[in-house]
Length: 421
Ligand SMILES: *Cc1c(COP(=O)(O)O)cnc(C)c1O
Image (cartoon, rainbow, N blue to C red; front, side):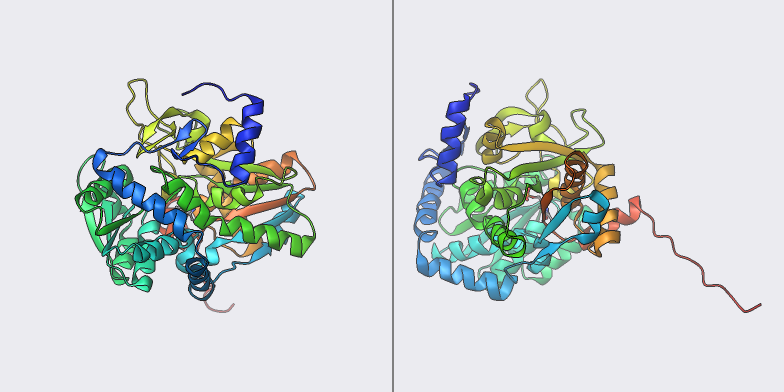
């Protein structure tokens, strides 16, 4: 399965991707993807794949989704010319503002679409997993809007680290369940969510938060996030009369990046650049740069690139941004890397923190730490390619990162000058 993809096969696979003819009927993106799920879940996944086929081609369903995206999420999100960053970098910079979507990030596009799908499929309850809490908040909000009870599985360690998001989920009506097994973080929460789905595959719907997991999730999430790239492409043409020379996005599981990239795959003049979390540096365990340093394998139901050690143990990962801290990546990204259509690099914690501060100062926008990785990668690209037009996916806002930021960048508060002379 690890056989090299020849340049000609690569061209053929890219053409299929552009025509939305991948994944194939086995859920494969070339060698990647598929459906490695326990026997008990296979019927539920098959039912989901049928529903995805049906509803994503149903004008009525898509019109209702569109209406909610417009009136509740706040789409289309703006495309903002970043004149301050452009001046500093010697480039023309545009930010696709997912930070302005309801609940503060792109994750709501996916959560809303899947919550509507769950209701169509007659689910009585939605199950979701969350690491940093952002997907849990988006799921809680979308389920409240759609009118389905929502249970969010979250590692006990993450519950402690992300207390404000736990409160938000609770206020939005979700039940939050602490997962005490395994590493007590996202990986264990996903395992627990799958276990609960197995127990009631008809009554419950599993709302997966990124472009990962068994077929049809990577495809479903890509279709729901492609609104980012579709809007950005139209907005670039309307505002500048041309497409970008490069489009840049951060990559955790890969949902905001695939949402931006997929509608641009056919635009050969637009280079695509995915930025992973380089953490403290390149050693295994010090980062979450899956595509940069990982190897192929199976995790959470899909064959893709992963971080694991010589004994095959999945590696603990590190990133200053909780949303990028995942040892896997979606199968479509693994294919796009193999065929060379997307270039993947990483940005370290320090580079991301620096880019975040620069964006605050130059644009008056506090980006999420995840998004700051895209900014850092874009800045590096701009220095190497002067005078170009750069589109950056700003996946979310940074308010949620304030506790982390205060640790790394303590506020300097000036004292008032006392008395007169
Ligand atoms: C969750 C998150 C990410 C990473 O997830 P992807 O699936 O890779 O997009 C990136 N940015 C923000 C703001 C997030 O909340």
